[in-house]
Length: 238
Image (tube, rainbow, N blue to C red; front, top):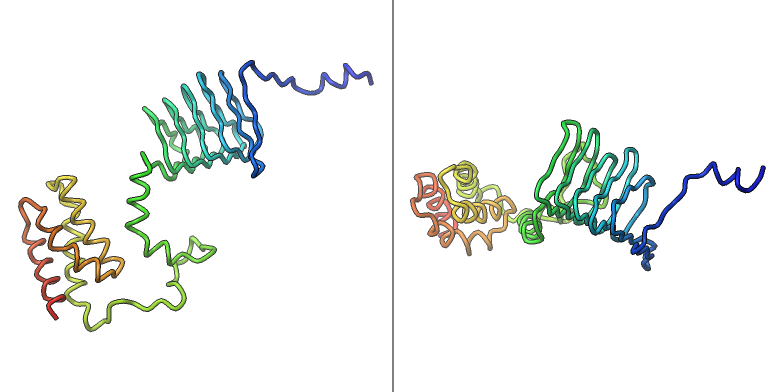
């Protein structure tokens, strides 16, 4: 078989003028191209960028990347795991999966069979969410069985004794209902959440420090809020 005939069995790869391809110290590729980019092979990337065009991840392709940037759209048919995706439009097509921590886009389109996990608008949202669940994050074992409850971290002792918890349980129950009130402003809702999350984590020191100031931020405290504050005042008066 001649060399020319053998070569005809393989697709031609064209690298447009202006394309940059690099390899970092972790073995991750970084690709920056001025036009459209179609990814047909699974891989682990540092950065994927189409300066002026769109990026498409085809079906049955799994891509992991720190950053994905597209001047136009990012179309996902396969699976994408990324820390940040920036594009004018992000589209998840049939059976596509995307695990995106931070997404910056003007529009987001998901088909009925697609799945999107993450999707924070910025680092502040992410850090606030992580901060509210620090207790749960500390309790996660090295490997997690998604079908069973998360065990307590080994050696951890509860901060609340059963006999001392009546007022705290009552306050938490009341705040679980109050935080869902539609008449609360975003600032008021955040104040209630701050107390509620501290109660959920059994962080008594934080509850005692924040609950009075948090409730003072409510313009029209409801009966539920007043009762929750009474329970907390009685607990910390002991």
